[in-house]
Length: 228
Ligand code: ADP
Ligand code: ADP
Image (cartoon, rainbow, N blue to C red; front, side, top):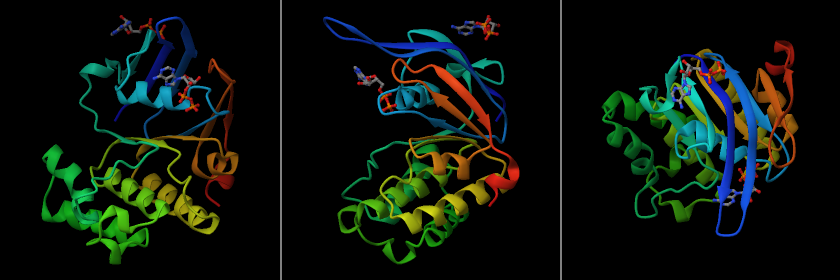
C-alpha cells in the first residue's frame, strides 16, 4: 500500500425534497502501516466515510488518493468488513471464507490454510462445516472478519467489527487482531463509537463532530498504551 489521502471530501445524500450533508471537508492522511480509528456519535458519517474510501460511494466533492493515484485507478487490495455480515446462508462457514479468495483469484491450498488458521485463532475451528444460521451473531461477525482477512488486503476498513461480541471476547480479539495486523504492517481504518476500542486498536484516533461529520480532533495514542 501507500499513503491514503482524503482531499477535502464532502458528501451530501440527495432525496426528492432535501439534501442531507453527512460529511463536510474531510482532509486526512493515513500512513502506510498505520491503524486509525474514526470515532464519533451515531449518524456523524462514519460509515459514509468508510464507503467512500472503499470506493462504494462517490463523494459530492473532494477526492481520495492512494499513493497519489486516484482511488478509481488504484490496484491496492482494499478489504471492507461491513457492519452487517452478509454471509451467504446456503454456504458453509469454510466456503464463505474461501469464496472471497476464489472471486479474487487468490485461492490456493496455502491461502485456504491461512484462512482456516484465522478461524482457529478466533475460536471457530469446529464451526467450519456449519451454516451461518447455526452461529450466534458474534460468531458470524468473526467469520466476516476472517473472510476479509483471507483476501489478504493491504488496506482494511472495519465498520464496528466487534459490536456483537461479549466483553471478554472483544478484548481478546482486539488484542489478537491488533498484534497480528501490526506485525504484518497492514493499514487499517476502524470505525467505532467505543472509545476503549479506539484506544486499544489504533495509533491515532480521529474524532468527528455530530452531523455533518467534520474532523473535530485527532489524538495520537502513545505506543505504550496501544500495545497493552
Ligand atoms: P490537496 O489540496 O489536498 O493537495 P488537490 O485537490 O490540490 O489536493 O489535488 C491533489 C492532486 O490530485 C493534484 O495533482 C490534482 O490534479 C489531483 N486531483 C484533483 N482532483 C482530482 C480528481 N477529482 N480526480 C483525480 N485527481 C484529482
Ligand atoms: P454513522 O456511521 O456515523 O452512524 P452514517 O454514515 O451511517 O453515520 O450516516 C450519516 C448521515 O447520513 C446520517 O444522518 C444518515 O441518516 C444519513 N444517511 C446515511 N445513508 C444515507 C442514504 N443512503 N440516504 C440518505 N441519507 C443517508
